[in-house]
Length: 175
Length: 321
Image (cartoon, rainbow over all chains, first blue to last red; front, side, top):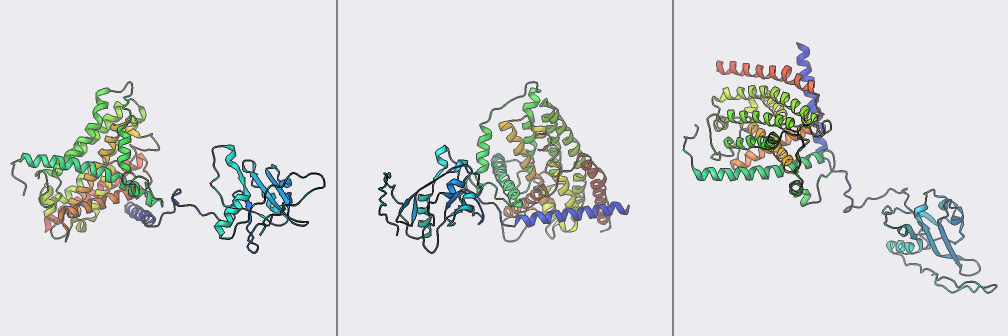
């Protein structure tokens, strides 16, 4: 007899406790990010595709077009072409990755001698064609500089094809 | 006292259109409210695209349902199948006749008001059985059988708890019940009856945690599996309107109907009704579904003895006073 009423009271109290949990959730703010209207902010270690790192002191990139990244990449998707500014310095004028083959292994970033590469936070990488996954990192770098508010580094021109012994380094505006 | 038996044609027509308008707007609003309440209890926003915070979403859904093809299963019992959505909706619509929305806003104040509503609530059981049987689908029949057992079992404590209030008031007319609460609301002196009534009302309208007949994850959709398009919309409409009716009875019997300071009568009535509906929706998103044997045990072994105890104590106290 007593256990009958005890069951009823214990059961009723547990129902009320459950309703308390639900109503506390009702008044909490929602956790959904409503995607097209609010953009998601990625965490610092998120891996999008690779991009050139914007060096804060020189306000430009640190790439010396040594092509170590292109040689290390297991999928051979990086194409780097450099041009010599003078006897010592070399800069890239063409840096293109084919992201559809990328395995996000990070070997290119690890092997770079000047630490010129980093992960971007780009997640909107869906496309309709294969060409949508080919990324030009030089023009992207100019956009990065524009977003950071620093003057853009002009992309060097393609050097003329070298004939034997006559490599004339072209004047470019590396400012 | 109840109105004399004169009838005004104009009053009836105004009442008819008012009720139809109320039923439609109420269903639109309640479906939106259900989606929003359930969403916020789950920490998500619910419908946000169509209209301000999804307010026109229900109209979009209704248009979609109207555009769907009406399929009749091949070996279905044709007339029973076609009549079931109508039979589920009509009693619920007729129950609006006796509900007092405000001081003078009652279509027909019958002196058997409560009996009318309870009798019509019993008719919906018949329609669920019709729908389940005529669909020629064994899962629908399971859903219908469970629903009949559940509805019959939970009608008994419903009637008995309402009886405890009626013997205090002395009349079956809803207007008299509201007028008898002029000094204090009945929930203050009969809290047990209120809790029992809300439980039985949730079970009568087949809402969770008692929604085995619809059991969306178990029986596909229970007794209304085979219904498409507008016929399904009628079942849906009937469920939400039934929810409004039981909440209206709860406010009339326990919360003082349209009484309240400052605001006009029908404003208080709707506020109270929607508060009770929020309570019913709160139940749905808190409790897991009860198993069928637990459900029947609960009705016969716990609710009915408690309801009888409540009635006997009330009768004693009424006799002593």
